[in-house]
Amino acid sequence: MTEKEMGDGSNSSLAEQNSQSPPRSSPSSKKEPGGWRAVKYILGNETFEKLASMSLVANMTVYLRTKYNMDGIVVVNVINIWSGCSNITAIAGALVSDTFLGRYRTLLFGSISSLLGMATMTLTAGVPKFRPPTCIDERNCIEPRFWQMGVLFAGLAFMAIGAGGIRPCNIAFGADQFDTTTKKGRAQLESFFNWWYFSFTLALVVALTAVVYIQTNISWVIGYAIPTSCLFLSIVIFVTGHHAYIIMKPQGSVFVDMAKVITAAIRKHSLTASGHSFYDPELQKSGSKLSRTKRLSCLDKAAIIADPNELDDQGKPKNDWRLCSVEQVENLKMLLGMLPVWVAGIGCFITMEQQGTLGILQAIQTNKTLGSRFEVPPAWMGLSSMIALAIWIFIYEQIWVPQTRKRTGKAKRLSTAQRINIGIVIAIACCLLAAVIEKQRRKAALKQGSFESPMSILFLLPQFALSGLIEAFAAVALMEFLTTQLPESMRTVAGAIFFVSLSIASYMNSILVNIVYRITSKDGNPPWLGGHDLNKDMLEKFYYLVAGIGALNLLYFNLFARRFLTNAVVDKKGSEGEQNNEEKTLEVA
Image (tube, rainbow, N blue to C red):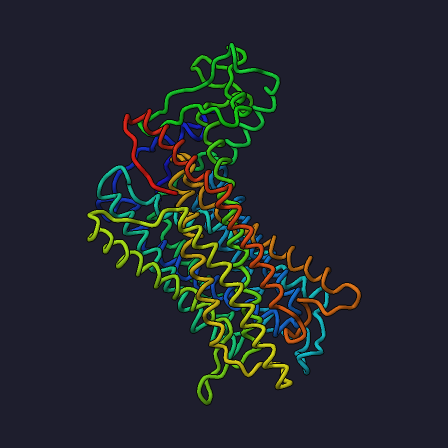
């Protein structure tokens, strides 16, 4: 194991520290740490960890509905709140990793927390006392007791904490193993990303097929014991490779830098820019340096040198919570300038969230039999989302781009604005289609007088496929926008911000469901959502409502947020142009 210090431990900003790469030696022999010698352990850990976590996530709706007798509203709330917490803890995980523990220890503690969560979930499946009795009649079920819910929530809490430690660190820790200052190191890093995505896809396929089938049709105990064992194995593999890793020491957090800028700007709110100089030190290595812009000028006060005594003998701030660099201020400005586009992404994710909960509840109450014996697990519907996403990526990268290159002489890719627009339109179409299908499903069930509709589960495939295309267009475009347009010192923030958007979408979806339930159930009217039987609800009306929200999001994006795509690129181009004396054209609108 080798530990290397990033930054010099002084009060210099993270933006400055990130500009200075630590000395590294490219792994060239088996005795040196890092490189593929270390990555094989990381990929092994990642594969088994993802298999475990996705095995839990994929079938959670079915587990809560069938084993905890939760009605639709409670299921949606539990899953959305848990999903939101799992995503938002990534911010805390990134902060702890960058400031205190480093990526290796954060990954290890996160994995242990996830193992405790999986073990608790396995206990709930294996010990009958931890769950309410099985429903004799689907329409009349005994609700779980308070302490039974407490055990369940403890398991989910451990899983959420674990996700917060794993998600912001797993890819970054793998990237730490390569020397990206060399051509060989950059090629190895690109290969690592490909293998990481392969391992993720492999784990997802196994989780959504084999493990979900075991959980639904054979045994929940075995179905949870398998991913728990996989998670334990992933920790063993990860710790076994300890001697081979390059472990970077914590260097400070970008989030702390942003807090410093806000604090310093508030402290100096009474100052004016005229007559004062700004703290704008040179970067410690060549790279894109952000110049001071006029937007959000109130934040510029954080970089005003009000008194020469604010600097020490080396020209650095004595108190970096009172004086920040122009680079730090512009980093925050750029991030705030992206928020309108980020909000539009949240609108798409609200629709995407529906299929993981309400879509699965629909699947539970359909005819799941194929042939004479085989019964399709409801969670398998998620496979159609993944397949649709994969098919589109293949068509786009292997057919669309090469054909446009052949016709025009250059590869013509869809712009960020185009992809987000398409994603929003697909989100609206997904909800409208789901509403039409649900109306027919319920009509057939009521006509037959049965809990399960005679309609085949296969009729739900199109709405799940459209949900996958929302991710392929809007989610990928938003992630790419955040990653490519944020400055180098903030690239690690992009993933965390993206997870926060997913988290907010989960929370907003939960709030929306509860508001709709309260309003529609007034005066004894049948609610659109709620209870143990969708046949008594009017789920299609809720889908129409979400489609309406999607239409408003489409107007918001095109009339307001879209212009911030262009602004972000122009600002970035301007800064790079001053630094490199050349400007690259990037089409985004």
